[in-house]
Length: 302
Image (cartoon, rainbow, N blue to C red):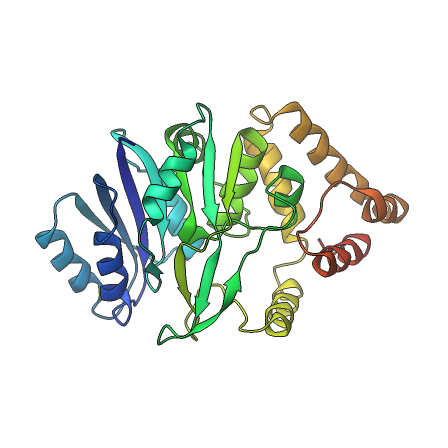
């Protein structure tokens, strides 16, 4: 395995957990890493902390910026990856990387010449790193039809190769769910996605998570339901799919073009939505999730 992995870290008021995260990054066994940090308008001591990190370590760059929100901040970082970097990996400020995380990701991408994305399961932990449960079990496998309605690529586990960096970094979307969901959707439609069932990150749950993940399945679903019906979130997955067609319609595989067209065209009339909800190819990983998604699609809420 050779080639620089550029780690992309977006920070925002992260002094509480950043030192532990950075320690786990430096402890990785992969020999060639660079760290690119974009501070998303912190008002605490985060800028000072990352400036000290940059002064003490080689290959660390820091960019201060206005607050864009986590998703846009990460995609902005992706658009500025060094031409010398062969891979890029997203990094959240409050997690802990497990040993071998980067090596596993790079190793999984070796066989692909075109755009490819690696992602993995995570161990959900409390603020003090006490174990809760494993999250993101991918029972049906990654696919474009799954990416249309569900994100299995937890951002802090993602590693992408150079063709995927160039593909994703060349166009900044205006309407998307989150940076990791967007990357999964684009690469699933234009290249290859590899899912690793072995947890590679301790994903810390606390009150300041950018995207909350429930401690229990009930908490996860109730939180998802609240976000689904929040103002401004109506039909967010369909709008993301439309944005994919606008930006990458000519880059998608023929199968993805067909699946995308069926997913969008069927929404025009309730009869077509009902028919697609019953027989359509788009799907979620778990049976209950899939059943609820299909009800929401028929109700024109997806």
